[in-house]
Image (cartoon, rainbow, N blue to C red; front, side, top):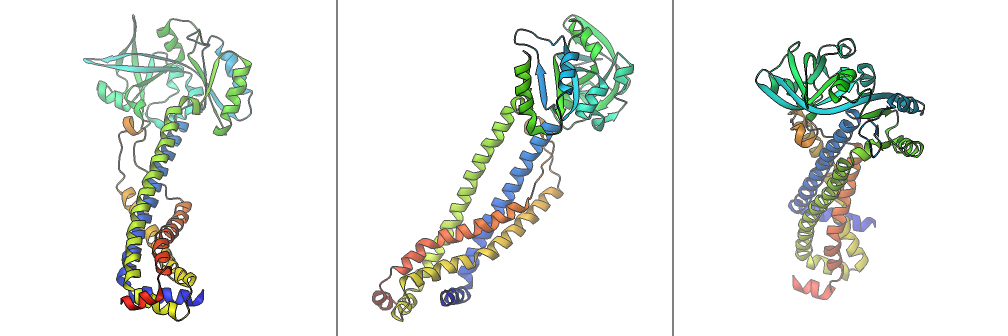
Length: 387
C-alpha cells in the first residue's frame, strides 16, 4: 500500500491544476450541502420550537356531539393529577369583529384566567405594554396583538367594540402583546367571564389545555385520557400534524437535492480522473510492465481520489460555516403568516461537519472507481505503444 500511496501523491503534485479542480468541486458540494443542512435544521427547529412554545401540549376538547365543556374544573383537576403536568388552562375561544372608529377587523378572542394562561403560555414574556393580570381585576379589558392594534389604529386604554352575533360590548385595551406569529394580527385575550357573556352558554369553556415537562410523553397521557372519559384529548403532534408532515416532506426533498449535488460533483471528478488516466496511459503501461498488478493500479487511482477528500471536507466545512455566519449577520426577516417563523435561523451542528467528511470521502471514492477500474484493465503492451 505504501508505494501505491507514494505514486498517488506524486501524481497529484505533478498535476496541481487537476487536483485543484477536484478539490474545488468537492469543496463547493460539501459547502452547499452542509449550509443547506444548517438552513433546513434551523428552519425545522424554529418551527417545532415555535409550535411547542406558542401552543399547549395537550388539548382536551368537547365530546363529539357537544360544542363546549361544562365540567371543565373537574377536567382540570384530572389533568393536574398526571406527573409532569406544569400548567393547565381552561379557555373559551370564539370569533367576532373588533371595531374602533372607522376600522373593523375580523378577530379571534380567547377567554382565559390570566394566571393559568400565563403559567401555561408565558404570556408575560410577549407583553409589550400593560399588566396581564388586569384581565383578573377588570372584566371589560382586553390584550390585543400589535399587528391588530396597527390595523385598528388603536392604542393603550382606548375603548373599542367587540361584537359576536347580536352581542356587542365596549372593551378597553389594557395592553398589547407580540409573539412574532400570525396571532399578532388577529388574537384578543379577554377575561373568561367576558367570553362566556359573549357566547351566552353559561359557565363553559371550549377547551382545557395543558403543558408538560416532557413533550414526548404527551401521547401517553392523551391516550390514557381518551380511555378515561369521552372528551376528545389530543397531543400537540395531533394538532400540528400538517406542520410535522411538511417537515418530513422537506427532509425528503432536501435529500433529493443533496443527491443531485453529490451527482454533479461526482460526474465532474470522474470526468477529470478519466482525463488523467488517458494522459497517463504510457505511465500505467510501464508500471504494469515493471510488475505492478492490476490491483495496485486500481489502488493508486482510488487513493489519488481519496487523498483530496480531507482538504475538500475541511475547506467545504469552513466555507459553509463562514457563509452561515454571513447570512445570520443580516438577520433576514420572514413573513410569519407564510413561514410560521419571523426570521431565518441557521443551526450548524457538529454532526453536519462529520457529514462533510463523509460526503467528501464518498464523492471522491465513488467518482474515482470507474477511472481507476479503467486504468487497471489496460493491456500494458497496448498502453506503452499508444503514447
